[in-house]
Length: 135
Image 1 (cartoon, rainbow, N blue to C red):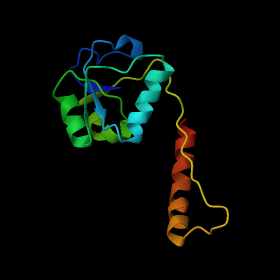
Image 2: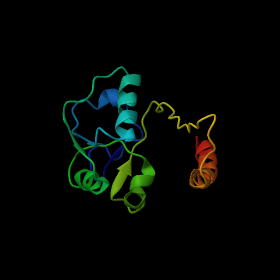
Image 3: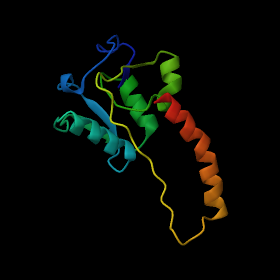
Image 4: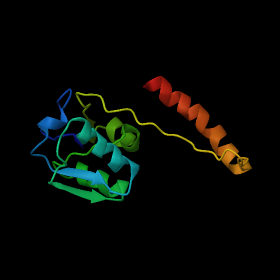
């Protein structure tokens, strides 16, 4: 979870979603994979979807809303890496680890993969290894 550096929750070592009932949320747009991941976090905790939130399709707008208010978001740290490193934002881990996300690649059995798709897969493999080691 991410908050501005002077947010009342910024010094917490961990937070649980169930304890976040009164906060104002900023979420990515509902058409994103991150929205579905956040939905899964709430579902895993058997919590209702928050009613006090805004959404945006812009990472820049999301970042600005978090840095300029007492709103809270759930995001991947690397999307806000500079703001975390410079202390503009504070990252607070969830008490209960999030469910693992699985990303799969589907290929047609009887069709060869295009050269472009093969290059894409070759670029993904090392990154997948890095992410697997972090988990």
